[in-house]
Image (cartoon, rainbow, N blue to C red; front, side):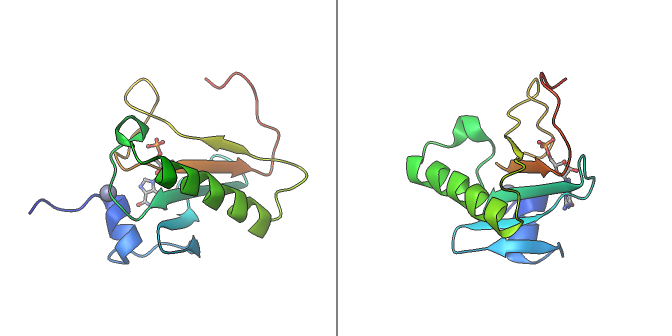
Length: 113
Ligand code: 5GP
Ligand code: ZN
């Protein structure tokens, strides 16, 4: 069996991470290289390489629901936050396990570069 990816190892507790949220299907933890005062990653426990391979609509809805719950937990309302899902090479995805970024604590420029 091939070695699990780094986010699978975080989800299973093999690699320690600063978990700020977990439920049956999702885990959230602080990004190791934060790009904003708040930078959290939300991942499904199930290994799915990217959004392009995520064909389970209930899982995708659950991912957004987890983002919403975490935004409340971290008191990001009403200032707001940005949710990003980088997908594939041109999308800037570097870890091939589906994840949503939650970025907050500063004004987010648009467009992103
Ligand atoms: P991507 O570029 O794939 O959208 O985002 C991957 C993110 O994972 C990056 O922001 C990177 O800093 C973060 N990351 C990579 N390895 C680790 C790790 O071992 N622990 C944590 N907490 N974050 C990681
Ligand atoms: Zn994985």
